[in-house]
Image 1 (tube, helix red, strand yellow):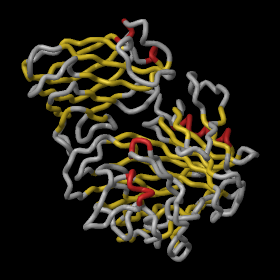
Image 2 (cartoon, rainbow, N blue to C red):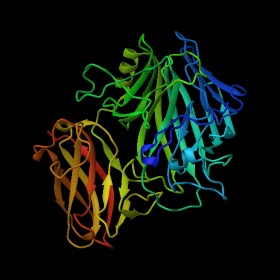
Image 3 (tube, rainbow, N blue to C red):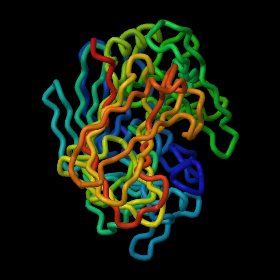
Length: 449
């Protein structure tokens, strides 16, 4: 279900199809896991996307499948805009999406093809070739894989996209749905904790949206890293992303229905922005839970990592993005190596929440070669829309090209306080063409006793 927008940076994602094509083969070839608490089913005629989910206390199916853009499914984004293949042009409604392979099928009703699947009663594995959503019958130049296991009412899903694009252009970072989740519209209440006191049992809030706007969904920060779609009684589906915090979601249509084919639906997706390389092997994990809202919150809070974040660039960018510079691409070999161009470069971390007083120190392992320079480490608080110089500290780099360990006392700034939602790193205050920087790690910590 897709809605037209002009660029992938604002298109997430599940938007209203202009075609209304029936899901080809829906319900024709299902594979299930059932542990007595939850039952989940994937349709092997639809790329192995999740088309069935129920709990023992609510046995009906809660997944919406009104078209091939719904379900619970993988969906990735990159350039160019528009994306064309062999003279085939995207449908004008979706030209702004660019490169957009999705797990179920395309906007014309052509289903994705499952290459391999296994179900041993404890785990379902599925491998498929997705379809390019905006084009008519164009397979994706990538492979999708999913692994699914159950633990009581919790569903653990691991995802992998292996890219094999001939186009090696390093396109700008795009938001990725990790994954897209569509439920029946009876689960219309989008609930989460978005305040500055996570894990303290503070009051939850209802995240509202206006589906009549050109951009129907609400973007919000889930400071406990989860959100849920529930009914009027507080029962429904929770989604947890332990290394995240950015979510998009809402309801579409005024209907409140139990029918999985109803046009009205509810939507939710955890999101990371990524430089999506032509050869990337992109893996992530997301947990789901069917149950009552208070139980969902309790379970996910118990699962949440409480230590300060640390990013080690051994093989990939760790959800950091790069702008106005070039790097070595995927895979990395123990370091993130960046070459400066004729613009001021910017490295930006993922949206992730931590309390400033629990992580006052930043540790950076960096090698720099070029003219003497001071870099800046920026941070954002929950109420900030963007990074600004007031919330930053300088760091002078050794220009000898060797790795050095740097420690930055973030707490020395009175602006480093409250709930922090991300870091950014500016390796120079002005363009330095030809200079290079390599980053092995950026880690936050408490003070030692």
